[in-house]
Image (cartoon, rainbow, N blue to C red; front, side):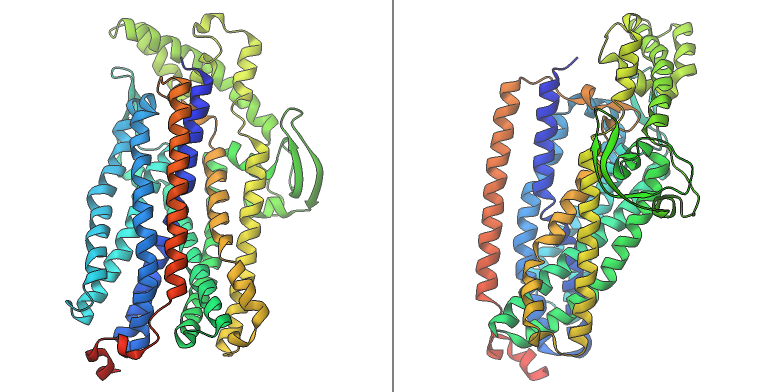
Length: 518
């Protein structure tokens, strides 16, 4: 149906825009709550330093927010331009949470951001604090609805394929919203944003302490970030474990790729701490294992077991064979919607329709499909193991490094000695990129682990793309990469400029009313 190169280019283009966009989103999510926390302390205590903190970090928040919006808008357009079959197939379901996100969360967030920036002298303390909390709430609600849409692609619930309209249709909004993948992923992703903001604030505060500038603001900001960060990091690790547990139920191939598990073994199962998966040979090379750990992590029991790719591939092969009659029935129904025999055949095999689509890639006329092609379609159900395996390990390693950093940071700041630990302050500055890298590789685990499906088990990626030319896709991909790289450069330049300027040191910079109250 489509040239595979066009599908690849469509995937690269979406991945590039998403990876760029995901550099901005987590910082917005986390900074919005830190701003609200700082302003809450200001309103509660009346100390002007906390207002100064909220205003300074709010300036950096605004730079990040503006570019995050600019990079995010084009992603939704890509569903229509580059993924037209996907949009037609699941648009009834996928469009609902995105529409709610735009109408409710994004408008709320954007409206109150303006009030937050320009309302310091026009609103009362309580009114401005309420506005800041509404910005934080809107940012996180926006993430919730987008992740609900994404989770339908990971674990499609609340919808069914209608052979009369030839597309998926929503039958339960409740199941769509309360999808276990959506709930666990929302909390995991949001808290990862809090960790990102905490590292960001701690790192820049450490920079000021190294330069002996803005010391009062830097020490107070560092303390708030360290306390916020240590709690958030514990939360993100805990919710990451829950997300893995959910993936084991909904996407066993993703979990097997994360663990490099080629063969099903009885428990207790060892954890591959380091390994080099070879997908062509379906085995690992140079594995360093930790006994019992995989059973404990995945099944929460000492002797638990999970299926490896040998079992999963056999299951996929059975589902491919069972899905072929469903696709053949659809072909008959497309010619005669009242064909009762074809409808009965479809209903008998509908649960494996997606696996039939996997096989259709090799033979548009499924009657000509060979046993070797059936086996190849089953092998296609295995995601790119090495990429998922190593992305997962980098994410975990980054998470543990950030936890250790925050634990030390809390100890030093509560003893009021952090400003004297020069090596730690230097390390804090170098930690700033770590949560961004962790977010990126975490996104790779989630999305590469879903392959070869656009909608897991329902719609293969190879069927989902639009029928563009290769030249058009190369041109548009290059354009997006160039444009978004410019956005990143602009973001970095604005951030560096604002950080070098720093907050106004003079208390005279604050309004007279604040000085009198302070």
